[in-house]
Image (cartoon, rainbow, N blue to C red; front, side):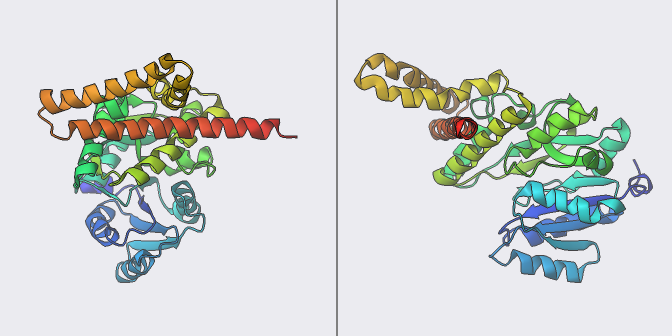
Length: 332
């Protein structure tokens, strides 16, 4: 597909961000050629950064006509995308969502537009490969890239191009985005899965491409990783409460982790109470050992611990949200 065809559409490249001073300038510089090829603009939507990101964004907007900057008072990513579309969507055909803490191929945006034009898809999603640098981050990356950490999710492991129910959000037709009211801002996490549910219910089509992908950098410490997956679990529970769309089997299994871990406290009454959590821990550690020996991956055992943190946090967040909602309904 030639540049003339790509430039026949107008594309808004949106970067929601918060405290990304270390990455934002390099990211924007890498995206500027795509904005030129796609007759588009790069919009930085800042959620109240205190590390200099806002000043860098303002400087980039002043230096380049193709770069815009916008403040996001609600701070969260779902609100940032909604605000971007509300302020600038009328002038563009497609929206490309870029995560500030990721890396993208030079032709990432062009490949997305090509796929949208060739398939007629209303949304194009991609696979996400996780990469780490510190020992814990590398271990977490290995866990997230394996079935132990992702349960076989196609947008985590990659798959041949196909029509999909969900994937890592990359491109959306703006008219389709607006038709369902954009993201639900109640969701600070899992807003993409909730959006995709409504999107498909409204008859819009999602295409997962294997022609491009992005690289994501996981949390480098246990605390932030736990909080991230706790929030993911709460978001998934909100999706259940809103749509009565229960998790599939790969999500139901880790859903049991928090209850069995808490149930292990009953071992003071009956030692059998510890068996379920012991089996879960043994399965995770065994998988980690297989990674270490079978795949010659020295981070395998630590990856198992990262996966256990993710499982427990996701499950705890899910049940916390579900029980909190139930208590709200029962309150007089």
